[in-house]
Image (tube, rainbow, N blue to C red; front, side):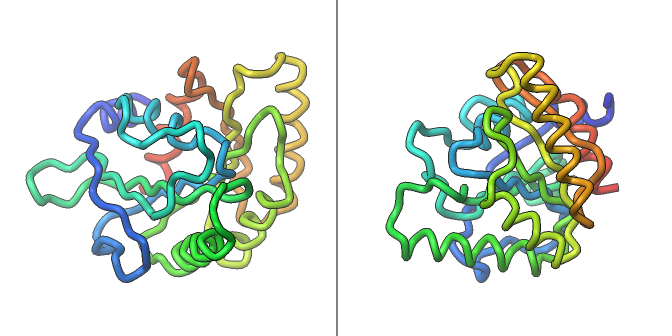
Length: 209
């Protein structure tokens, strides 16, 4: 955990937004992708993970992230290759946007996850209050078929009672065992309470080694 803490305490910066595959950065650093429903708290988690306020844009309107947003972690010099890149992907499920735009996001996310050679792991975020939904299973099935290893990450763990959290944790772990590409270890987090962040940082560092 200490090397991971030091890594995320170092330089972290926004690199670029990619509205299409042709706009992706050069595949010169390992990437960790964040996927989740539109209201799962993805931007808040990224901000807490990197200890930066406002690094990833948060909004009360689900579905604001419409592109693949890339963040460099651990770059040592101007123009240098970072230790890794975090990729904030468009949310799915409840995006308040026209259907053709949502369809475009879906194709962008699917094509990126299936074809990105430097993608080391995906993190599929699940709202602790609701558990795994069918839209989450669609992403999980797609990652299984693409042989992309992924962690299931429970978010907003502070929003429910301990007994409810224990139940949803057990249910999520049981579902993960049904998916060939799902990492057996479930990560439980709260960006508001800073719970589980050290473990998440360590899991990310482990994934790129």
